[in-house]
Image (cartoon, rainbow, N blue to C red; front, side, top):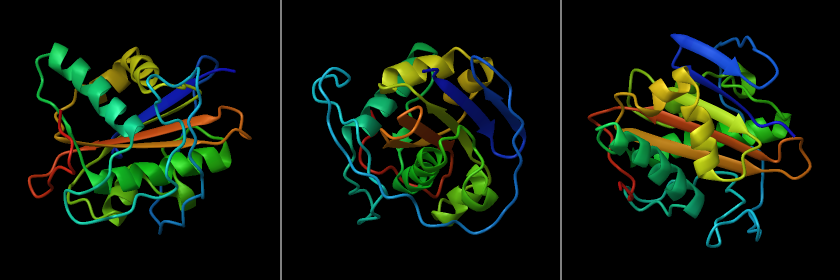
Length: 207
C-alpha cells in the first residue's frame, strides 16, 4: 500500500504528489455537506503509548478554549512545532474552527478514498474554513493517507518543498483532522489546516 499526500496554499498554489503520479485538482465554491460518520479505536502495534487511531466524525464546538483535544491532534501539533522550533519559528496553537474544517476534509477523503484538497461539493480549503467560522483571508491545507502515525505523516510532508513551506509558514493556528476507515485502500486519512488571524484564539493546547 502506497502512502500519498498533497497540499495547497489557499487558491494560489496547488499541487498533489504521490510515489506514482501528479494530479491536477480543481476548485469551486459551494455549500458544505454533512461529514461521514466514523468510529474511533485504539490498536496496539501502530499506537505509541496508546495513541488514538480512530477519529471523531465531527468536531463538537463547545465553549471557547475548551475543546477536548484528541491524542492524535496533540501529536500532530507537537510534531509540527518540533520542526518549527528547529527552524527558529514560533509555535502554532490548535484552533477548534480549523479542526472542524480539517475534519470535514479528512472524513471526505475516507469516504471517497481520495487524496485531494477539493472537498464535498467542490469546496476549497478556504471555503471550509469560512464555513467553520474562521476569520481569515487565507488558509493552507495538507492532506495525506496511508501513514499510521502523526510523526510519519509530518515527516513525509516535510520531504516535499511545497509542503515544507506550509509547515514552516507564517501561520499562528493549526487544525488537524484524522479519520480511519479499514474498508478503504489507505485506511488512514489526514487533513491539516493552517492559517493566521488576530481575531482567533487558541483552543487549549499551544505547546
